[in-house]
Length: 168
Image (cartoon, rainbow, N blue to C red; front, side, top):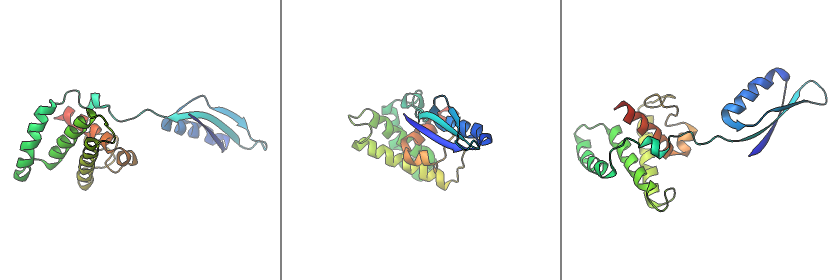
């Protein structure tokens, strides 16, 4: 948790307060006039909002079993040369690697996690090359080149997998 102090004009205060509450989890805003009386000081305690990505449990709730996806990915790699949608292949492969990484002793920094992150980045590159805009693949809030997606490729992957699975 941290405290933010902003000095602004009184008409700007409501818009600034709204923007802060959309970006952070905020406490009550305390407002005091500045010494010259022409501006106001806003004080607010804030903390980062909880993660905005789907949890693995949510993203993969209705996913086929890991064993089934291993089989699909193996045949998909062969079929990829024969017209299978490349995006679907990388989406499902990255999701499979993500799910395997989650069962690893080190789900964030281990070898499986590294492979999952690289596969998620490959999916992001495919989506970026396809020209997906700010609405993402299927009405997702984060595009592949959004700063949060770049920071958390596996979060982007989970968003896209959940949307893809819901629409498939």
